[in-house]
Length: 159
Image (cartoon, rainbow, N blue to C red; front, side):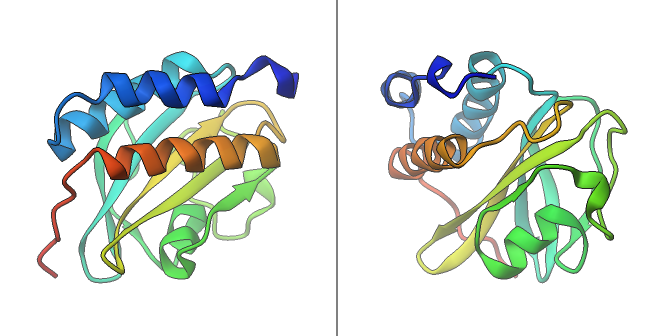
């Protein structure tokens, strides 16, 4: 896909206008739906929340039913949570401990969401297209999540 076909600055302004409440659940659901509808070649977009130690619990998402829970020790989501750094994988089948929720997924982008120095959760985006996510996609999604964080009251999970 052509990198120039996604205008992340425009998407960021649209997401900012869409998030008209500070409620984390509403904003999480809206953000998933917005990304799923705005970007081509995706088959899953969703939040995993750190509601217990070293474990991610399924949150709002768009796509097929998903894996739950995900330990920090496994998969791309676990690595993003454990390292608190964005994980961009061109071919998930090359990741030894990949958790295959949907066999059609090939590329994955997982962005950790840190609030007040605590991991709140991660946003997981999957694509059936190998090498779907570029550095520019990563920067654009990270910017969208900064808007999400700025406009959302994120709870502190009791763990």
